[in-house]
Length: 472
Image (cartoon, rainbow, N blue to C red; front, side, top):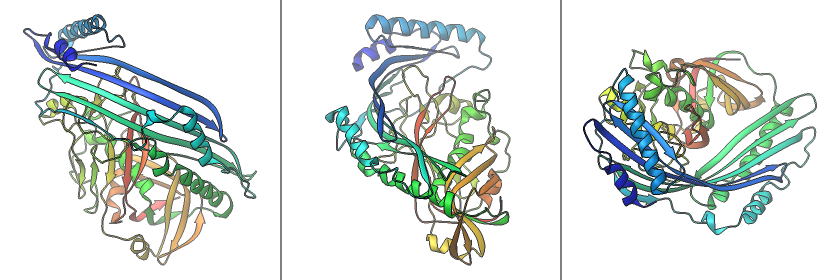
């Protein structure tokens, strides 16, 4: 898409009442390979592209999108956005505005060591199959009943032009491998879902070591089904792995910090946020700091400018136990009287930019894992989870361990299965008395919006120790 073409359409909307115009070209070239028990079951490639317009007129916001990127198609889409904005301005209860922002004028791309377009689909199929070969080798008494693997690549190209000076071009390739393992001993069953992902080229297939992750998860299923005993019950100390810490911060502080959710936009689809009425600035112990940072190199949620042209930066969601900033796009920033912190993202050209997370993680501390163990007289270490859920306000969460171990007198002891940690957000963060020095990330696809907008994210953290929480 030519920059001058989009700019000319943006500049064509003038006159009294017009406050903001935005055009976004958004292309997603994709390849998806689906395997069942190591056998290719489906392959899909294609390109999905189009242009969207947003127009703000007298406090009413109009949106329109089209896959017809001819001048005639763009003219028609822009006309529909203008008409929608005019109609909205007559009915809007609270005027919409865009906060002032320092907008980017930039072009950037993520470099690929092994370019995705440099390999054939057949080459990619062979490499994935080679890495999972022998995964289902029998190990009595456990049998891997089935396993699925989905290889997915997306090359995302964007051009954002705004009427107040924003102009950003970007190319971000992303690769992910998602898998699900189901195992049984005949009497008991367990399964494990996992995802590894990042931004870059086909080199990520090797760098992310998804085959090693899968084999490690097969071992975890074996431990759960064969070696593990009954779970402990009662109040005790708990050590959580980076995998569970990352999931917990995504769900219990990332989503609640989305400003549009606090304002009620997500109420019908995904609930509200405890931050809407939470008066106490303290949410946890001084050991807890949580960031959301789109600028981490190679990350799955990577970007340098958001879909409104605002430069990305690290956002502080919890600062040493105190609630920090909210995640904003320009619309919600205007409501709160602050500047946008570049949280506007859209999943494709059909979707409007809404407030989203990127890479959410708890900051590491000073403790080695062995030091976390040393302080535990009797407790449990939860290494991997099998399932989780959280309420609509993101206040009460439940995590069920797939692989966990008893801790006695500072030592890891026998494995236990199906350990449940159910805890509210304040008690969770307040119970943390020590934070590990390690930092690991897990990948995910975050769901939000109506229609749904799946979004690539990372979730991470170190090992942490919780004192005196109830498990069952």
